[in-house]
Length: 633
Image (cartoon, rainbow, N blue to C red; front, side, top):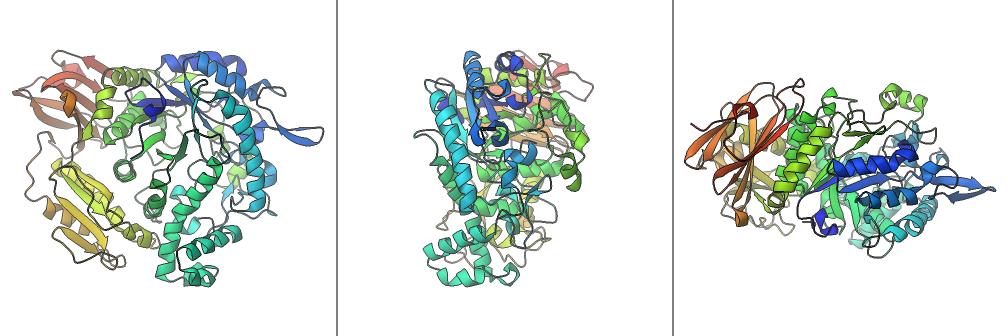
């Protein structure tokens, strides 16, 4: 697993709080005050995209870049970094080249997104677009030449002068959500333009199967199962190769970060399988791997909860982007309850970061940033959704007023200052391990509309957690076929493709044929595996609240967290010393109890309802009833 992000911040031994600040949407006169406010709210590292199209200028007919505000004070990135350092913040820079961020063409210059460029097109010819304009293939040599000019300019003029330890920049993100958001796209949506296919042919030759290259150049509908599996594997290498190339343009020694979105576990396309197929190469890339959490609202949607549970545990990644105030699809994201719930869930599942995206609601930007309204409408997006302010529910605001989720961020900051070291050192308590053969998603990513093994796994693991309060931890089967070491005597089930499984089946191993995966096969297997497992110490009463536990054994500290994504109240019970506690968990809320040497040390709650103004954290003593942790009985 990657080293924690805190390793880049000497002296910090707790999860890192990363807050996004879109300076290109805020007036420069507000930058310093905004950054000081973010630091006061508990942010450790401020992250920011650098939109290429915004910083590229034309002087005397020649293209150049403004990073010091010569042409526009809002382009003064050097001044921004000075203000961040003065506020006591470290910086994660994200120069793209494609950044998303609701910026026109994801920050790319117009000239790169025209029909005469080689487009980013999937296996079936569908072009990837932004505001209805074609996005370029980063395998196109001409596009790479232009990207290299931009990236080297950022490296030489922004990163190198501000690189830690003497400057505030501690890491650089390569690309965003893959290259053009493709790390969780369907497998057939992977870039398959002429330049990309040429790279695939080289990769096939390097693996000794170059004879498949002629078939690879043809219609993917006619591809053999072997070639499809190889494309699934190359899909991850396609990303890592571009990341490695971008990293080679940066200063020596700079820490590099990549952002891989979580994938939905339902829908017409097996996107979770495509995501999983790419993770083999991504995990071995050598870059710090994080994730984006744009898969719904876990506090209100069990399906989204499943996507987080499966994705964070299988990917073993940290949060790089989490919604703290965008209300496009769910008004609840402007409530502290939702953001705190989701942050606590990620921390309990193993993230070593808290992401606040964005940390400041901003309203000052011009035409270079604003997305094309007609292009949005052509893609079925209402332009009014993106009107100022950008991120209306953020913890801070450009004008200096506290934002809707400010108290939620303060709560997490207080909690992490006191207990974050225990969380970082703690281990997730598991009752069993479910090892998944990577061959399954590599094959099943090509089967839309089917109930794949990963979809079954997401549903079955969540079901067992709710129904029996047992956590079955999904992880990858070793590439050599060996069951991953669990560190304990936990029962292990292995899901594998019987056509690729090494050796004979062993007890506890389930063989799944990718073409014939009957619904609930995984669920039935887990029930059989767990038949003799004892009831855990902490359980729910109504089958609605998911109970997760982390333990720092060296310092004898345990975290018991209950998450209720349903519309009905549940209760969670467990031992506190010689007594028994009852935690009331209303709909859409989370409760965390902290126990040290068996005694209740603290408890944290999110609001009961949208009408309840703030979450709460209580330290020491016996819990009061209004904290929703009832007295022991």
